[in-house]
Length: 171
Image (tube, rainbow, N blue to C red; front, side, top):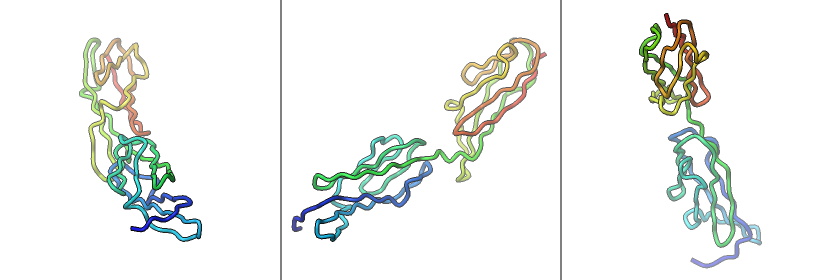
């Protein structure tokens, strides 16, 4: 096609606030000095500053993991960018213990599941933060809990901004 002079370009996204798994479309517009504009989406280069958060295929953006990234576009030496945030769509989490009544020296495993806003469940034990309110009673190592001394403690898990806790007694 015919070449034309571009004053600036604009980048628009269908949405800048996404949940993991969502997609949105981009539109790139070239603005000419005479005030006219042309959709150049199919001719512009569109990229993400962090492909692990959002990746770009053609003009489609897909949210991959929670975080923020910037979508950048270039057309005839002009650039434009838009920030995008991705939420991990965690509605709540559930902490489960193999046993809540332990004797000193006993160990039990924990499981943390994320319940997502789309209705799905995911085991997030490896990504969750698991702690004990009293390490002298119950100690946490990764996803394994060890009873140390008689008493009670609460095991707490956090992931995606959500928390859950379970009381443990050691006797």
